[in-house]
Image (cartoon, one colour):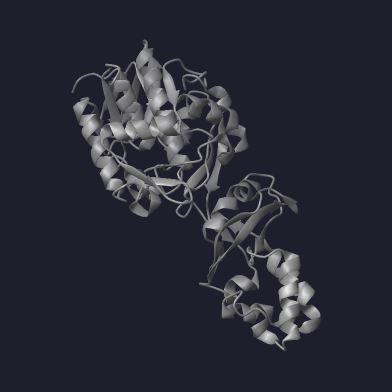
Length: 399
């Protein structure tokens, strides 16, 4: 095996693009991937469709601490650059009404076949089922100890991912490798994750899914704006796209000490404001409608079970208020096996934002979800992986 100039730890989205951009600069590249195939998480993304990125790609869809770095990165390699990169490989894409962009085939496998072909064309070496256990820098080179053998390199790119879906390869081991070089780790917590609530509504409405709006509250103060999407009641609490999209600040508030009191406000009638909803109830009462008929056509029939005490003429003002702003207290989040992303990671203040090189160790680069950068559901996390990986590969090749 040829001795590589650059070793990339992690063969996910960020690692693969880092490998391609570095190899295109003429350096010898090796990917050390702990799973049996490259891109296992990419293959699973978007329910196997691979939500590549989003039409509205900007820093507002990422954690506030990372906004400045994200904006700088996308100004150098943004939406059009990412699409052009994939188009050059032969990938055609289509955008949906909500801005999510997918391969025209609706198959993540299509993308991975093209990426694999480019890696082969560039003679990028891959070592699969390779778990990097430690890295040390000695004599001007990095020495990586793995479950296979020792690997040496001039530069190392740490693209090992976060901690969500560990069965797909990202188990948080990259954080330990970064810590060994003195990096500070912002405590990783599950992100874009279902929420646990003891509210009786969740048990009564288990399995019910409706379109609504959600917002996160921390210590009774608004932590997110209202976000529209699906709301799914489960035996443990709440899920659905609206819940996932407001879950990040809740997870941070619950899972990082000191724990805070958190809740979710839900709006079950997003197509009417509260005054209009009250008028609708008044109109129905004037027509002699009471009981479950007060909400018929507005909500699924099952909701009458939890609203029975308010389906009365003298309770319609309370009924309107509940349906527009019902508070659910959250006791915890679901765990890493159900979280889509990771909030937390290597402190980005310790990374050169122009090159992705560590400020702690020359020749060590970090990109993707191993950094404390997490985006919203809808293609933002993969967009960060593509952009940060591509730019990191170029930087590592130039040194």
